[in-house]
Image (cartoon, rainbow, N blue to C red; front, side, top):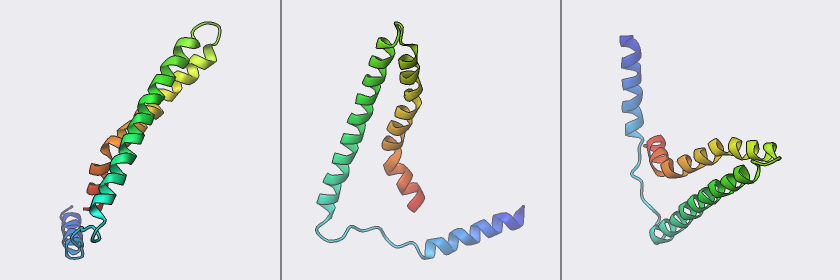
Length: 98
């Protein structure tokens, strides 16, 4: 077990030596921030719209259309998973790249 810890520690030290500072290209910081902000806003809006559509499907499928309600209920984890991924995207990307 100590050998594994030493190996992991050595690999982390090597990786830190090759870790460059993250820096935006000159003149692109504002444009990139605006673009990423719009993408996140559109993604969150689509997720909220998806939850509304799922609610409509479940409500409309209650009477004589049980497959429509089941399809709506089956979509809940996918929409919530997408919203979670959008919300955690900055932290997740930072954790992977750091």
